[in-house]
Amino acid sequence: MSTSVASIRQTAGKGAARAASRSRGLGAARRPGWVTYTLLIVFLLASAYPIYYSVLLASSDSATIAQNPVPSLVPGPNLVDNLHRVLSSDIGFWHAVLNSLIVSVITSISVVFFATLAGYAFAKLRFRGRRGLLVFIIATMAVPTQLGVVPLFIVMARLGWTGTLTAVIVPGMVTAFGVFWMTQYLEAALPYELIEAARVDGCSMFRSFWHVALPAARPAAAMLTLFTFVASWTNFFWPFVVLGSSNPTLPVALQLLQASYFKDYALIMAGVVAATIPLVLLFVVAGKQLVSGIMQGAVKG
Image (cartoon, rainbow, N blue to C red; front, side, top):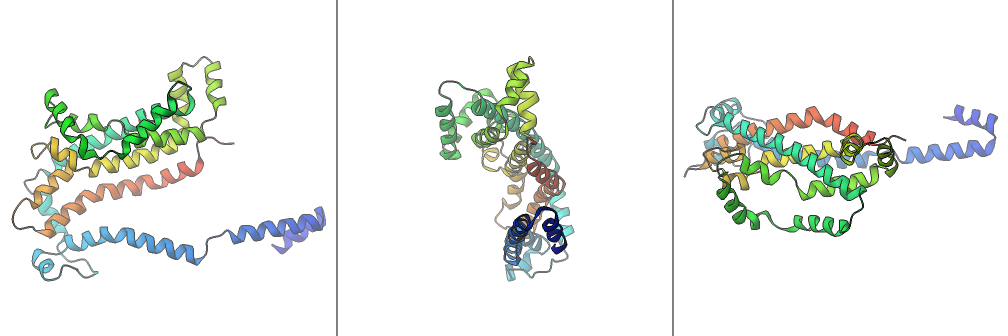
């Protein structure tokens, strides 16, 4: 550092050298210290402990859990056996996994497409009532889901969709949170000049969205895809109401493991671990790409 400052002093003078030294001192001061890393480690451990606690219970047995509800920090020897019991049980585990995968994938793609389309309209198009309509959409997030279950179930029954995956997919094809998320991102990340250039080149409104707005929204769309997939994968209430046990998704099927007077907590937690493994693999595979996309940004200067 001293060599470079000395070279700056020789070539640009003492004032430039002092400015370079101050800027380097500010850069060093911004580096995270041990307090930051300690807080991050504590937060990471606190977030991972519920999953690890599930693994501990899933690797135990019912008698041990009844005697000691707080297991030791070392997993027991029964994890593989309990997982095998879940996979071979009569709840239809693999059928439920397939149903959850279909619902989560279709819902994620639909939410990202329609939310980005609506976010593009709210962020970059000028029409009467735009702000009021956006406020109304955001206000629907304050309405509890339980209030709309009865009329929604009546609609699904009249359409003949009860017991089918369509009744789960269609109500979740777009979300108010997704519209708000994409609107806020596109307002900051998409310049009007790119849209005007596309329109000058002869692009229609939808082509300008497809070729300009959608690539610009890729980082936010990736995060929205992850959020929507996790929410759909873990959704229990509405699939339990409209599907029941005849054609269940994975959370509904796992609920059947405890539908008796005696609850085998080792078996139940093994089912929870089996349902969590796909989400963990998703974070491991897509985490680096998501972070790199966010850091890269939508528009390069």
